[in-house]
Length: 199
Ligand SMILES: NC(=O)c1ccc[n+]([C@@H]2O[C@H](COP(=O)([O-])OP(=O)(O)OC[C@H]3O[C@@H](n4cnc5c(N)ncnc54)[C@H](OP(=O)(O)O)[C@@H]3O)[C@@H](O)[C@H]2O)c1
Image 1: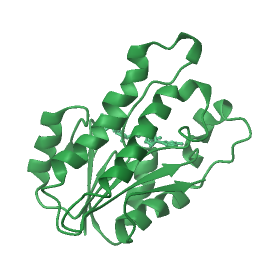
Image 2 (image 1 turned 180 degrees about the vertical axis):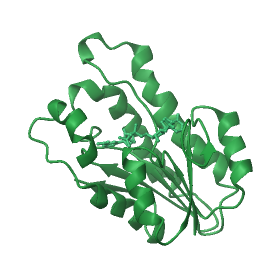
Image 3 (image 1 turned 90 degrees about the horizontal axis):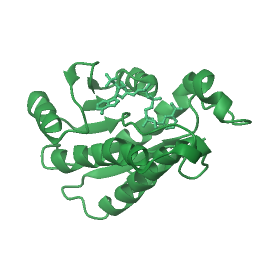
Image 4 (image 1 turned 90 degrees about the vertical axis):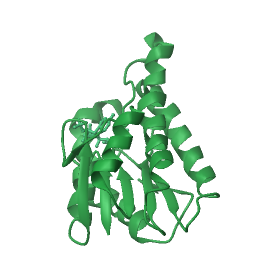
């Protein structure tokens, strides 16, 4: 398969690319990294990415930002960062890509543990993740041409443990290969409209 991995040079994206590249043709996209430049928060940029890449069989998104900081001082604008980037950025990839992807192709989006097992600093991520999970379940009912869509919701990644471990007392990190395997299950498997939790 020809697979676009948005955020494929990031912490989780790198593990996904490492696993999938043994069996597939991978195109990595990112704002400042990868084979093709894209900013998922811009409609023009996403359209231009699809134009440059041409045909593809699957899209994986391991990108999307949100605000991280204490809840006591968070503003509405900061909370909305997750909606504009992580939620609507991923929705945009599907809306603009659904008529371009091959028959039977798949979209795999990124959620995360802070939706259903929250920490106070990550409310903006929690809002975005909830939206992503709702979108995937709803879109899974209606995609045509046997297209599939899922989200992967990882726990705290092993390679992020040093950075985010202090905000997650007692949380066991998830091996990178385990997270990557969940993306493989979505891309190569049969499921649709599902959230694959990897904890
Ligand atoms: N790490 C964890 O433990 C963990 C756990 C659960 C969920 N998640 C979720 O997984 C996602 C990725 O996390 P990560 O830790 O791998 O992050 P990361 O190391 O910062 O990597 C993010 C990647 O996405 C790209 N990117 C960021 N914003 C983008 C945009 N607007 N348009 C296009 N590409 C963009 C970045 O590339 P450029 O800088 O070149 O744009 C980078 O390659 C996040 O949504 C995070 O919430 C992470």
